[in-house]
Length: 424
Image 1 (spheres, rainbow, N blue to C red):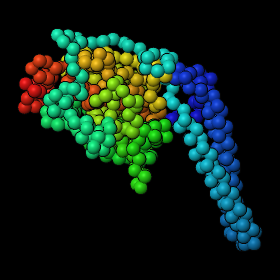
Image 2 (cartoon, rainbow, N blue to C red):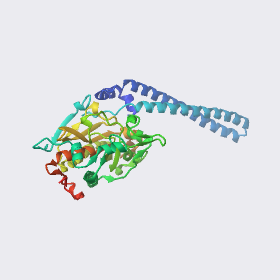
Image 3 (tube, one colour):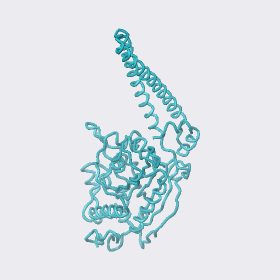
Image 4 (cartoon, rainbow, N blue to C red):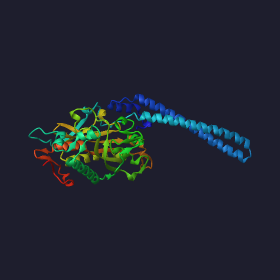
């Protein structure tokens, strides 16, 4: 959520910045500024009424001291009227504040200055590529054919149990996925991240705090009876760990990692480009989350991106790094890098990680602050990244490591398994 004071002072500048997203903010800003003025006007009236209450209370005390009880009783009637007036003003102010927040919730984060204007993923900037794309003697098989050939993933049984987008991992595929999860967690821990296990269900306050609600409400699975949401990523519960807390300066940075299943209702369109593991309703992911001082948050973003790169390098998968354009940038993000791994069989790049800086957009909603060097309360910056998302990593391992003798397992994961090849 953006700061209404900042919006009022820099309205035209922010409108221009949000145009990178192809987002028109003028009407919402006009509404927000008007509501904020009304809220402040109500606050001023409350302050005046409270000051009048205090003044009269002193007079009442003096009248009782001098024995003028009738005058004191008259003034007590006046204080009753003032109390009702203050109560009424408070109720009106609460309604206006709620309306103001509802308007501000509709405004996405301001893109970082390095973000270029663009419409969609086709306008993202490719920063560079690393790794060798494997060369096969014959056309490689896509992972869904390999999964069937080696009895690794059963999409039909997943569809029978739940529906499309809920695969069943079997045998060596299940073990490989478990090993990858452990490998990512171990690597994250070695990089200074503290592992946490968090709930898979969150309340609306948690979803609103990180920006999934109300923006992505239709994409989340909702349990109506309990008013709880299945998490779309562990970013949501991990970031909410410190909701309404105030850090000491020396507490920062705080770095967390966690593994969870993730649940997303939207699986996109149908077709070959979303076959197999390319897009699912339920998938596993290991996440990293930072709480940072504002001055260091962009250094932290680069550190996180470097860490994710090292994971991909150790897996020996060909990848590229992208900087998202305004039109493809997530609602809450100021700057996002995407990492994509090349799928040899599908002959395309598949996103396996996004690492983002949200600046104070989430923490303003969450009220997560810290005391700076002058002992003033400032909003912390939050960042998160996938380290890594499992389905497409697994798909690319199956496709890129396939041989005539079976599917090889990346060397770095082999110590966590009792096999080095699938189907050999």
